[in-house]
Length: 391
Image (cartoon, rainbow, N blue to C red; front, side, top):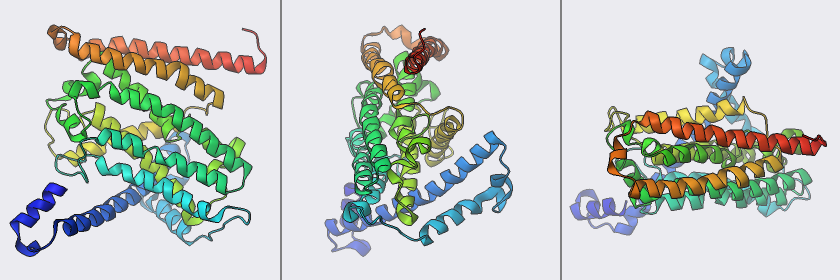
């Protein structure tokens, strides 16, 4: 953005005599408005998509027949309803923190879109530490969740906030570690450079570059579900235990901030997965035809669809089961993937590059199944111990 501003100043024209700082400020405001509009519209589209996915999986007729063509106006009506609903604040709540909490959560989700490369030329700010920036900014939401739970003066909201903090802080480690298994292969944290390094077709994508990055993608994806509080890791909002979790006392527009932030976070983790492991805006055959934005959005929507698919398929885990999966399954696996990826990338013989990706998929697929089996056995043993069953 700064280079573009200097170019405008140097070329003159309508901007002749203007300052670079002024141009940067104007471009920043316009970029903020564009990102805000994109996230708001994307949130509505994803809500509509989730309603359709759940309806297909559960044979529900409402989203199929009500609300115009394929139920699109239901989501629009929900948005208008949230805007017009009465805004209630509990009498015993900490009012300043109660008001500020949803803004913090929404701002954290919104700011992560700054470094997402939608195409070769479409990115708000191409930071040379883009990966680090996204990992850091995505943690801001934890502060907002804690603020919401504490300020509500509601024991269910506070318990949900504490669960959310423990869950997100724990799963940030495997998320970051699984991304780091790719970084040494490129030598940069620049999101655009990560995409460019995967040019050449689907066999050059990092998910297929070596067997450890293949495993790292699945570890990242599973851990990201917990990072954004999606099933089967949605215990901060467990309605059967906590009413609604940290946003129990919120209504109207403030509740919609939490709602849109969750779907925005789902999109961001999918964008990061597409950028780091799936070639970003690159087409499967190389290049970006018919358009980088098309491929980036297509990969994001597919990964979000799988998140929704899992929500309506898998049961919710208990807190102890969730922590077991993090600390005893995914975390050790991420250390293996990170060390193995570096060793494979820098010490493996060159002839290994000619191996078919199918062999790598089979090998690491077996490893992934063993990990899932280990996790399932651990969860089953924990359930039996909880119930007092001797196995």
